[in-house]
Amino acid sequence: MEQGASVPEKGNGKKMVQGVISAVLVIAVFVFALPKLADFSDVWQEITEMTWIEIATLVFIGLWNLATYWFVMMAALPGSNVWQVGKVNLATTAVSNTLPAGGALGVAATFGMFSSYGFSNSQITGYVVVSGIWNNFVKLGMPVLALAFLALQGEGSSGLIVAAVIGVAVLFGAIVLFALTLRSNELARSIGRGVGRVASLLRKLVRKPPVTGWDDAASRFGRETGHLVRGRWVRLTVASLVSHLSLYLVLLLALRHVGVSEQQVGAAEVLAAFAFIRLVSALPITPGGLGVVELGLSAALVKAGGPEAPVVAAVLLYRAITYVLPIPLGAAAYLKWRRGADARRIRVDEQKRQAVESSEALPGGPLT
Image (cartoon, rainbow, N blue to C red; front, side, top):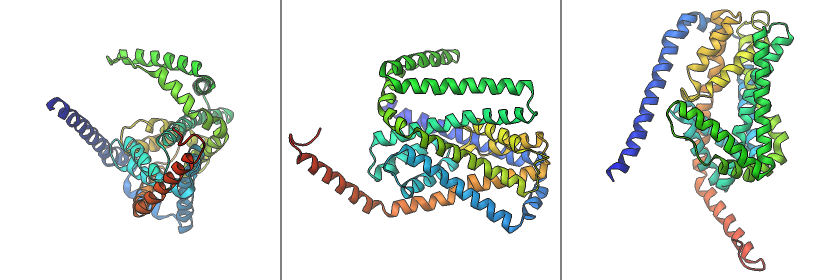
């Protein structure tokens, strides 16, 4: 029993260390790094000089951006509706943005909330996996797109062009492997074994044990999600692109509203900074990339030619709308979900009872 009791203690200790590291990093960014890049009094002046129309349009685009991901969710979870996915998305985003290891906690909350609506674990797992894969495809593709735009405008160096070509190759390879995984069970197992060998080799370099069971996992994934992807890949792709581009539009609009012109930092340069920081922030360094995104975007945009105070002001506005705003909205969505929990449970139980009665009425008795 004593050995078993030590496991949660180790897990809690690890989470505590992660929380302390995240807090130190966030404090370092906002107390030391960003003030060196631009004086906060100048940043505040840039923000207060905005008109109410500029603020209103920025908030409107920010709210639209929040809603766009709901279409991704509905595409990846057949049978869901806008009210269900809206509450789940806002609540889980609030969790991810505020707590250490918020991404994992957000996934757990996703299962709990969608289960209350009557969705099975396999349906929710398919949604989590497929929507995650599509998000990663777009995250990989956006830097390539940004580099291509820079090259077309004559602003891309030979190094950037090479990076774009490599990015295209990596993205194309990932899509091909994904398509082959769905095509046949044997191909899925072969790909799983191959990727598992590569992962094991990389883990060996850091003295970690090899991975196992990736062939079975790939085969299971192909069986469980193949039908969903084949029927909805167009909807998933369009919805994911709209969602990511809407997020980029919030940043671009914030820059233009504080006075950073196209001549100072072009739209393609903004897209490049946005796309690469999105890749970096995918690493669970701090909740929601807090501090990492602000510093990374500010530094990249200033290096591209933007004036320091307006750039930092725009980045902080962008983060206030995309990172801070979902937190109170998510709390309200969670309370709304909790308030209807009892009625929803009764309704779901009744639906399950009716399904059982219908199956028992079929020839041969209940389905198993």
